[in-house]
Image (cartoon, rainbow, N blue to C red):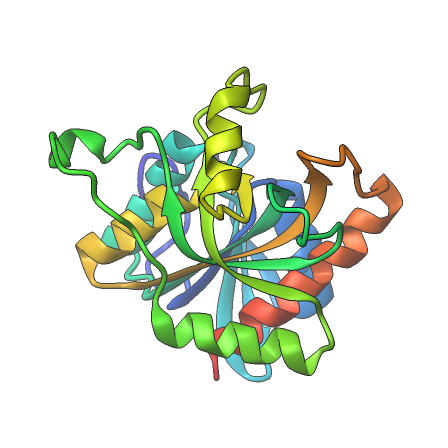
Length: 234
């Protein structure tokens, strides 16, 4: 048990999927895991452990933003021994070729700042995904017929952004999409020698202003879970 996770020793699996929304964690556990049981309810941040094709898996919420994810990822790694952490969530497309419902698999994650920024001081550290996970996720997405894009994303500090100039430069430099957690996850995984990946579904488009209808978001989210699970145990 930690300050933020009430799970007992042995309750957290080596493979952890991390949606931002704890209710998404509950939904995914019910849909994809056998014998899922709730292992954490502290502060409403739900976590569930069960099995997928016989493999133990935990699905645990991260909350919104890098500071929240950093709390849970640190404790999952340091106190519970998590080895593979995969963020599953939505993102906003920043390239015309990236469409609504497409899958974005983040090779790198740029950011203005992260909770780990103080460690690096003047260094602009470049956090990246685990290549084995990334290649397995791409293969899983392609087998499923998904439109998949692999490359750099942007992990933002704010949801209501007021920097159109920055967005323009990121689009110009090939950033595929924006979300709010992956850069810190990748940094923590590097620090503790763990595997990490972000598998994202495009729910909104910053250039066209399209948005995925609410009734379609759950179905698209489910596809991310499948890709993440296949990648974790490839």
